[in-house]
Image 1 (cartoon, rainbow, N blue to C red):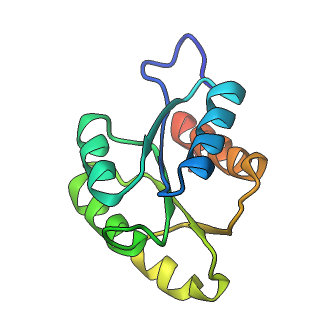
Image 2: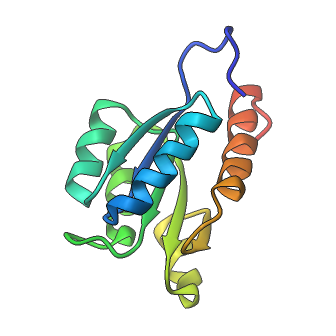
Length: 133
């Protein structure tokens, strides 16, 4: 949970080519949290967004139109000074090993329950802000 003492807002980057799903997740986080929420519909837009505002968390669809989410996470990891929490959204639950090798910490089969995502993100935020993670 963000407090007035926190210097910067926690930033969540949602990378999802399905505009309806991306919009639903973004709306959920904007209403339910005080996180800064960025949305990108392809990998190039995600990289540009991350350059402008490095995310604390990236929720990444695996099946993007320009390159897959596995490649994007590797590129974000190389680009960013601090690795964010990477959450994968996929329609293929059999990709677990590949997702973890690419750098994802968690994965969720679509459609993901936003309350579950929020719980994982809030725990990560708490750990980052308190140095317990």
